[in-house]
Image 1 (cartoon, rainbow, N blue to C red):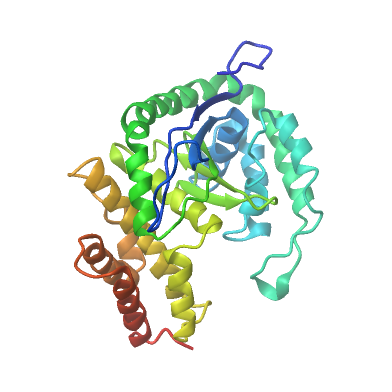
Image 2: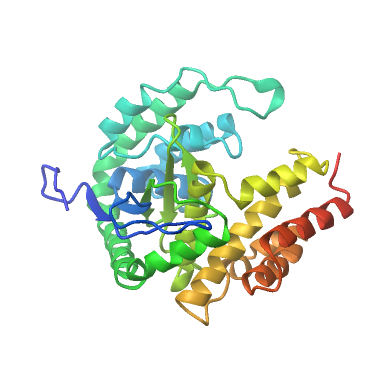
Length: 346
């Protein structure tokens, strides 16, 4: 714990957990003195404030507390400017900031213009100005947030962090080892920063890449379906994204197989099929090593239903592989064949 706030209220609580271990595919366990992938959990009031405001902006506007109305209004404007899926250009810079003033300083270093990879004619977005406006509104409501909202949010997140420490972290060695082995990933020996927040917008968990190219995770701990071992599955799932960013894996192999078979990178299935493997693997790792009665997040939250074909086709194939009934290569080839047969190729 570190306390930097003038009022004595914890402004920056960090729990550093370095108990993770990795297993290189086909190479056995790492030597004890080698670096290992690990998790770092952070609790930050200004990060919590940001995701709370965004949750309000995407909810029922009539229920927004008066103290946050201006911030929510600006968030709605910024959301329209950024469009769906582009908040990461701003949110990936939230880490390490303890106050709205620090956040404003950080946002002031963002590129003046951001040109999304996708969108109408690649129209540039005034990223820096939009981000600074957000930080200014956070400065205006930060005092109210720290006095009236943060105490409850802090209690919620710290309770869930204690649950993570007691029930998840002691088992993390074998959980991560299983993930790395079955996903064909050599331990990238990275530190995975995870910021825990009390409220967030849908879907409640996000992996982003900073401008430096390193991953950062944000996880809402008390989403209705994030109770019990589902929260642990969610952490594993988001960790899959960081591993995918950092190392060759089954995901990169599958994307290449899909592309070679003529499946367009613009196709939803090009993204949904590998992504669904992440859901299945994380759920099965929890079920097999932590809780035999675990119900998969993909079922509970309706992800498998929402993605249609990928949610129906991928789980039984990947579970057959995990059960040793087929090789990983055979499982991937079956997925590619089924995807092409659906007509997803160019």
